[in-house]
Image (tube, rainbow, N blue to C red; front, top):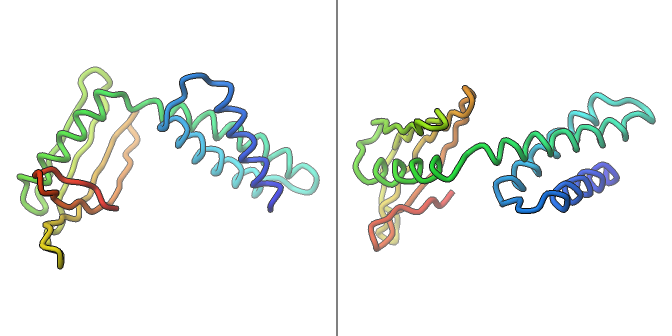
Length: 156
């Protein structure tokens, strides 16, 4: 198992080093893709071919993950962050706020689920966020707390 992990990490380093200007989204996507590809390769490969399957899987996964990481552009992030701040501040629990980037056709939503106050008197909200890229919906649950300046900060 240790050699598979080493191979996966080496693949990521090679890909990151060969691609100038690779940002954190692309690196994160590459890491997740390489790990997923390595796991698939380890499950599908047999005997001596397993190592090759892990290598091919991690490289292919890293490239696919890197491209997906690149697919959410700056405008998507800006509109998504604005919607998140507005939804957490103004939406009632179970009320969904949506966004769409007309240029990329990417979209998403934020639904506050529960509001509570911490022992430190911070107001926090649990929420469900969705992002749709190329027709594929990704969901994430999280918690954000209101900071003294009125903005909301994701805490998990």
